Length: 476
Image (tube, rainbow, N blue to C red; front, side, top):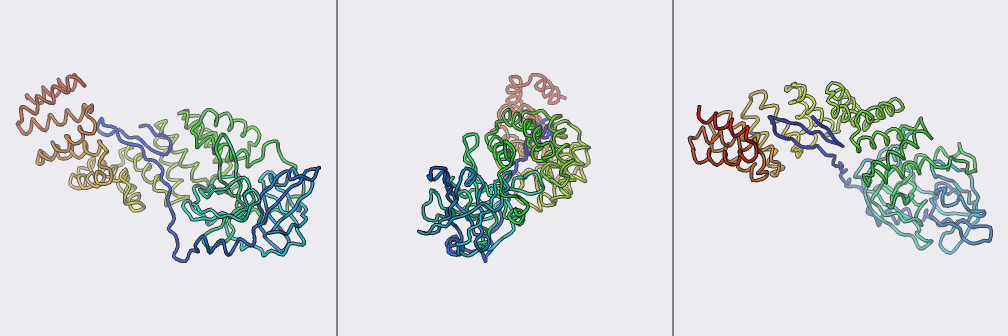
């Protein structure tokens, strides 16, 4: 058995299975959600322009800011870091500002603007966000009038300290850095930040929950040569490009610089995964889980690594831990079912696939696995039903047609249906020697001599050994 990326491959009766790939779970939009226009009307008065001036009095950097309290602004540190004088603008009015707190490692700074009378924003909770949630970004690109962009939360990226930064499809330009990301109630859930890494423009938002921690940081820019945000942004960009060699080099530098950062070790594991170096990936994920044993994705990835190494008992334990942390992870349920199949624990696998199907009735991989279990348990009618459901969801999956034909063939009562299933499979993959062999057996049971001769001709080209076996079986 071979597992890769976010999926499992299983061999069943000498025929290939398939990979179980991740699909984002999109949250339904609540009926009480505000429209983007309503959110803009509510929150735009609390978004300002932030300008940093150099020693000659010229603008050195410009971005956006969010009013979090009377006379208090939050923005990205990279907007104000290079300035000797700071200014906040709202409309046609400019106000002097001073740096109050600076968490440069997280790229989050707070400014004091005593003369500003703009209303504070309503705070939200970034911890409540899920992938697929609707969000709205408001900022001031290039110092122009306020703009709005709508999108989804595409991912929640582990930051390595138990928190997550938000990746979004909402467009964020460099001039909008430091603006606000709002949930569907118009509450601030993030401070937007655009990062250009490895040729990609990444739209991130720093969780609004970090704002409460800013008073712990002095008004200085003391930070490592590479900030924590930069480490994450580069790792995400390389992952999205599937540049595993570059990610490996980056992650190695990261774990040396920050050996207690769980995200660094996870990135190292992902790089080894992409390079199919399974033992090294397992070691990296184990180290990550020592630092953060609550990371469900790391447990899932560890299960994948053990599966690739054919260490099924260890894979089973890892997937079970992932499910304990997130009982709604349908991929963990599906892959746990494949592990149970590999361990020949078909009753347990049947239950696990059933749970995966409850979570997602359209999961054709789980229906296929359920068919395999029923087949092995000799519950042929149930197996036929499960394979038919898998085919209904994915009529192009050749293995489902082969297995359906095999069940019909085993019963010797539905030979015409078996022939039709094998024929359909061979229409999808004419090189499947096993399907040709089984079709030949079905023709032999029918007494269809012409059909036997046809399959023998194909098999002699594809697999002479199977052709000889078919000839002997048909003439017994």
